[in-house]
Each structure stands twice: as C-alpha cells, then as structure tokens.
Amino acid sequence: MSNHLERWSLQDHGIQWNLTQDRVDPHEDHLEMSGKKVSVIVSYGVNQEGKLALSRKVVWPTLRTIPNDTHGSLMVDFELESMPTLWINGVRSVNERPITFQFNGLLHIRSLADNGVIIERTLFPSVSSRSVWEKIVLTNPSDQTVSIQINANLSRKSVKGVAGIYFIEVSHDAANEYLLGPLASCQLSVRISARHLQEQDQIMDVRQEEEQRIDFVRLMNQNLRLETPDGVLNQMFAFAKLRAAESIFETKSGPMHGPGGGRYYAAIWTNDQIEYAGPFFPYLGYAFGNEATHNALRLYTAFMGPDYQPIPSSIIAEGSDIWEGAGDRGDAAMYAYGAALFALASGDMDIAIELWPAIVWCLNYCEKQKNKDGVIASDSDELEGRFPSGSANLSTSCLAYAAYVYGSRLACELGEEAIAKQYVSSAQDLYEAIERYFGARVEGFDTYRYYDGNDLLRSWICSPLVMGIEVRKPGTIAALLSPRLWSEDGLVTQAGDTTFWDRSTLYALRGLFVVGATEEAISYLLSYSRRRLLGNHVPYAVEAYPEGNQRHLSAESALYGRVITEGIFGIQPKGLSSFICKPRLPEAWDHMALRSVHVCGRELDVIVNRQGGRIELIVSDKDGFIKFEGEMGTAFEVKG
Image (cartoon, rainbow, N blue to C red; front, side, top):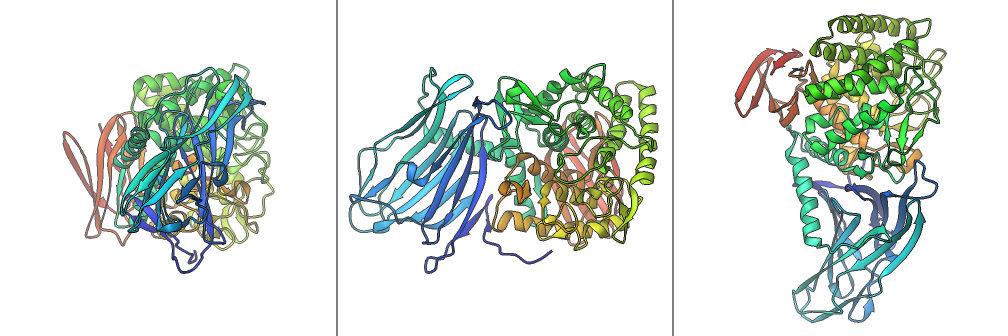
C-alpha cells in the first residue's frame, strides 16, 4: 500500500473533482456508461492550456459491422471539434475552462466560458434507445445581455454493416439564438444516435431520458444498500452495482451482459458473465440482470454434446457465432461454479431444474479432464495464454472444487441424493489433489504453484482461499500481501512483472475475508477503494494495465460487489431457501448492514452489530426479524 493523489472528493451519492482556477493542473480520464442499446466511453479532463478536453466513443452493440466478430459493434469517436459548437456574442467559444467535474451515475461538467458564461453539461446514455445525450445549461452571471447561438448544421453519416446501412446522426434542439439577460439561463440538448436506414427516427425528450437514467441509478442505489462507517467503501460499492448492472444489452438472442470497454459487447464469456457477474445479480434483485444471466447459461447448453467437446469460451455477435481461440480455459468449471451459485442464490426451483443437466454435464466434463494426479487439466485459463498456465492450473481445479460443493447442495434440493453424495466425495478428492499437486514452497512462501514447473508467485494463488481451502492460509496470505505481488494498484499477475488485472485483486480481497483475515483484508480493501474511487482513474474497478488502458469492464465491478456480499458479510447459499452468513466485522466498526438483499427468493436486511467481544446478526424482512448471537467468525444458518 502507498499514499496516492486523491483528485476527487466524496459528495452525496457521488464524487466531485474541483479545479483550481489560478493554476493549470492538466489531467484527463475516461469512464463508461451504458444503456440497453448503447454504451459511451467519455474521455474528459483539462488539457495543458487549462481548457476542457471532452470526447466520446459511442458503441451500438446490436448494429453489427463487417466482419461480425467479437469486436464487430458499430463504434464511432466524437471529438469535441466534431460536436455542435457554441457561439457567444458572435464569437465561437474555444476557451471553455472547467470548474468542477461530478459523477453520480451521470457525468456533470461545470465550466467557465468567454464573457463569464457558465456552461453546465450533463452527459448520459439513454436507458432504452440507441442515443447518448448531453444536456447543456448556459447561465449569464453578468449584468449585460449575452447572445448565445449553436451551429445549426447537423452531422450525419452512413456506414455499411451486416444488416445494411446504418445512419449515424448528431442533432440538437437549440433555438436559432438565445438572448440571456443578467442571471438568465437557457437549456438545450445534443443527441448522438444511430439506426437502421429504414427505421423511423424517434421523437425524444431529453428531460424524460434524463429522468429514466436517474430512476435507474436510484434503483441501483436502493437495492442491496451497504451501510458501514466508511463512506468511501459505501460509495464504491454503490458505483460497482451500477456498472455491473447497466452493461446489459438487448440483442436478438435475448439480454446479454457484456464487459464493455470499447471491445466486448453483445457477447458472453464463461468467466465474465457466468463466473464473475452471474452469481452477484440475485443479491442485487435486478430482474434484467438475472434474466441476462439465465439467458447466458441457456445459450451455452447448445454446446454440451454427448461427445464432451469443450464448450466455447465465448458466444459472440448477438449469439450468432462463437470464439474459442484460447482452447479450453477451464470453461466447464467456470460454468458449473457460476450456474450452481446462481441457481441456489435465486431460490427458484424451476431455474434449478432447468440448469441442473448443464451443471451435471460440466462436472462430468471436469471428471474426464482429470490428469493422473487428480487435478483438472485445461489448455489455458481466463488470461488466455498471456501468462503461462501449464497443462493444469490452480484456478480451474479450485473452481471445479467449489462447483462440486455447490452442486452437492443443489442436488440435495432436487432430491438427487446419490449425486449429492458423489459430489461431496469428488470435492474431497479434488481438495486433496489440489494440495498434493499445487501445494509448494514458492519464493520462500508455503503457498501454491500455479502450474507444474511454476517457480514465480502468481496472483491466482488466492483461489483456494476464496473457495474456503485453508491448508496453506498463512503462507498464501503472506505471499499475496508481500511486495513481490502487491503493488499500489493491487496484485500484479506474476512476481517481477508490472502487469495487473483487478479481477485477481478482487478475488484475493474476497478470499482474505472468507478465511478470516479481516484486518488485513479491510486495510487493503479501503486503500484499493480510495485509489479507484478518488484517485486519477475513477470511479470503478478496472480490467488491466498496461493492456486495455484500464477499461471499466462491467464484470470487474460485479467482483467488487462480491467482496462485500460473500467476503465481508460471508453470505453463501446453503439451499434454495436457506443461506449461511459468516460476517467479518472489522475491529474499528461496531455496525454494518446490507439493506434490501435478495437471496433465496426473499428480500432481507442483514444487520451486524458488535456486542462486546461477540457478534449479533439480525436478519429482517417484512414479516419480522430473527436475531443470532455468537463468537466472531461464527457461521449462522438462516432458513426460509
């Protein structure tokens, strides 16, 4: 951990960056916002001259381009110069200087232009149409009348794609001229949109569009509300819910949760959507998120044949094609783990019955992939060959182990007692094989090698901790938090390298809480959260660096959410109508709560209080509450 610049500060339901007007502090950043038919990556900030830097990359996931591959979404860059321009008293405004940037689910920019005119911009995507909006309010603070005009030329172009011609337009609703008297204001809006050439353009109202976006953000804030003494953690969690839930696109194959980042849309992966994000959505109580997960799980069943060929890593292009360029990444283990968790947490017998054959198929596949040492072989892992993973890696076997555990619980719910017993036995066999095959002394730490022949510490040695395997807990924790792996941005992928992926950092933080290393975990989580929320690149968990320029991929935010739900609160489903809660209350806190948790078919509040050296857990719903008491680290079972 290290100190770092905190450029932003906390505000009610958001964050704000205030600029000093008497000196130039150049800095630019980018963030992504999404709706059901569009996504926008806004690059914003202050350039070397102290002027506003603002551009947008707009993505339309279902307007497929040629070739129609993983990255075949229609994408267009809109620089500031290509957007409609303001004219103040007949002079083009080119000296706009930012005063504040604010983000609360919408990006707000307040600037000072020539003649002292204040420009307030609000940027956001449409919730349900193929539009990105910018609402502009101009205020004249002077005692003189000011003339405001916006160039009337509409920007239009067409692009050939898979379904014909796509029509892209930048339009605005400004009057020919606004004469603003002292302290007067006017409002106009700019819209970026795209459609099939044959489609009729919709008449749209920026006020209604903004209200819908605000309502969506409000819904995300209301569901699964975190209450702790730490405001940074509460806000980071709130934003994580938003980013995880907004990046779901309506496609011809149903709703598809997509990573985003300017590359990954209208497609699903066994890690991002099924292993990472899928198990989070039931707790959030967001029906569209659950539908997207259910849809992703359903789409993969078409590839589960009797000959047990590997399932594809990704189903792309709105479900019309696949990608499997990295071979078998342990995808069946990812699927079985995510599907079993999702089915249990949903608390829906119909979903459990539907998903059960696919879970059984995937665990049968894992059995067939066992090597002579009893661990699960795979061609690669979720990093797809970026770093070596051998013929069998630790992540795949740990995922399969957890899938057996959750699979056995689901089997019991379905009356499959023989299979439940078999899965318990398989989990124990794999538990022992993981220790024999991967357990090792690496760089002086009693921890795990990531694959046979691995002699450098790897970030994914956190996997056993996440799955509750504590055999090498002390050495693994020491290795993860050592300077060999932990950097100011979290875990590096491999000791001696500078590459980091937030997904392994977030897995590790969850694992530390799971195994009771609460004080270490909370210290590192708070440091990480402050950097991601208030530092130089905000306000979400990121994908990686140097690859991808720290894209705000959606599933990483879901993983952040799971640090809270499964880590700090220790929630995991026991059955379709019962769950375990093993809270990890940090020593500095007397209280924490999760409000409006949706788990096992119920909406609950989960409240944790310190009572001397003991812990009190209160689980309440509309019908009343249940109170539990026990020692710190007690696992409480909550039955429906």
